[in-house]
Length: 390
Image (cartoon, rainbow, N blue to C red):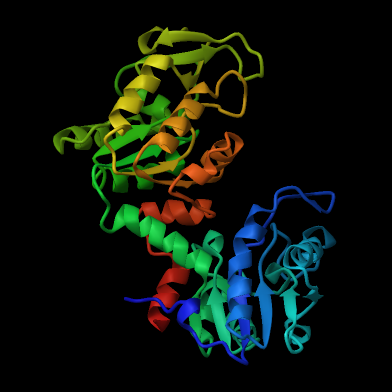
C-alpha cells in the first residue's frame, strides 16, 4: 500500500506538524552530538518551502517519568540549537495549547513524554497532537517502531497524514534490502548478544546469500560449531538456536562463514596485550575481542561480489584499542565496494563515522531499533498507520 509523502502534500497556508527524532545525547545540558537534529532539518525546510503558514515540531528526549516535567529532559537546548541551524527562532512551547504558531513561526513542543498517555498511545493525547495543525508528518524513523500517541495514534487521527523526507529515505533504503535487492545480497550482523538479534538472524538467513556474524554473536556460533571460546562473551543457552541457523544456511546453500583466526586478550582494556590466534587455539583465560587478519581477508573476498549489503553491529570491540582493526578493515572494504551498503545500528554507524567513511556508504540509517525490526520482517506501527492513511 502506498504511503503519502510530504513532498506530494499541499501545505500552502497550512500549519504543518512534524514528529521528529530529536532525542540527542546531552551532558550537563549541552548537546554532544547533533546528528539527529541535522537529519531532521530537511523536513522542516520542505514544509516551509511548500508554503506552510507555521510549523510545529514534536519529539521525545530520554526517559523521563511520563506525565512529569523534568528539566534534565527538557527540549530547551534542542530549540536553541535548531534556532542556530535554521537561522531563525524556534520557540519552545510548554504544552500543546501554547504550541499554535504565529504566521511563519516554528514552534517546538516540549518533550512529548512529559504528557501523560504518550507511551500508552492514549487516544485523547493523540487527538490533541493531531489537532495541532492541518498536516501531520511522521519523520521520526528512529521512533517508528513505537506505537505511541505521537508516532502512531496521531497519524491515524490527523486530518492529513504523510511521511517526511527522512522517513521516506529510510524506507526506500531498507526497501532496497528487503523487497527486491540486487544480488548477491549480504548481511553483516555483529554485536555482543545473539539474544538481541536472534529474530533478525532467523529472518535474514532466508533472505540473504551471505550471512556474516561478528562480535559476541559470532562467539555463540563458534561454540555451536564445537570451538572452545575460552572466557569470551557468548550465550550458551542459545547455542542450539545458532546451530539451527547454521544448518538452515547449509541446507539452502547460503554462505555463513565463521572466523578462522581471532584476536584475544585477558581483559577488555585499552592497551591490553593482544594475540592473534587460530580460532581453535583460544586459551581458557582469554577472550575473543576481534577477528584476525585471515578472517578479514576471508570476509572481504566473500563480500567482494555482493551487490547489496546491510551492516548492523561491529565485528569486534572496536571502541577499545587494539580491538578495532577488524571492524575498520571491514568498513573500508565496504566503502570501496560497488555494493549498495546500508549501515544501521548505533555502534556500526559510530564506527563508520569515526573512520570518516559515512559519505562513502549507500545509506546511513538513523534508527537502531526501528531498522532492526524492519530487518526482522516486522511491520513498524508508524508505517502501518501511514499505509492506512495512504
